Image (cartoon, rainbow, N blue to C red; front, side, top):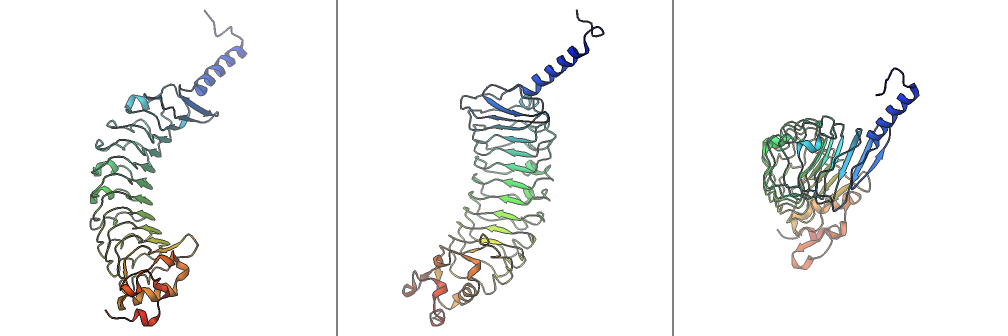
Length: 341
């Protein structure tokens, strides 16, 4: 039996170093580990992987298990990575998450669950971690339980795009005071509840493209005064109320392309002073069925005065009357826009 009191101090030191290094440098099967003295990043991307790995370095801060056949995850699985700050689980076959999913991950700020098979989730499933980025893109979520997000006061990015949502409960957006990016694109939303954005004072980017929105209330964006990017393309909008963008003086990008718009209310764009400062900033109105009668006068004047702020100017064309069909609105003569109404 070894007597520590008589052992060579250098041997004791060597034993400690070897033990520490073996713990830090351990790496699970089917994974690669990039380790240093202070942190480790682990990537597991083998299609043969069907169970959550074990034996991670004890200083793992980033874990990516992506595009595997992983279908389940348990609380016990996550106890092996208590220092985790970023967890990427995209492209797997995960159908469910356990209750208290994140309770043993007190440092986690990023969770990416893109492209799984999630549909329903337990109440308060994301409580327990100071999440800043939550990505649920490309799952099968049909209904949102507001409790999912009620503990996420630090969240800055929420991505729910490419799901099957037909509505968003007002309560789901009432506990996200630091949210800057909200992506609800490519769902089945038909409307936004009144006051949906009232409790998102720091919201800067709102993605609503690829839904079934046919109408927007006049004050929809009144409380979202910090918006810089608003994406409404590929919806069913036929009319926009006057004053819809009145409070959006910081807006840099507005996409209204591929809707059913035929005309624009007088003064709709007058307060959008932030549009078009750079080449990547501006307004997109392409692929709408514009009616080029006297009601198009405001749009015609605005386009000709703000050409540098408009994307795809040539694609903003008349759909009717027949004599002007396919003609670029900005190229119309004053006589043509003064036609009958």
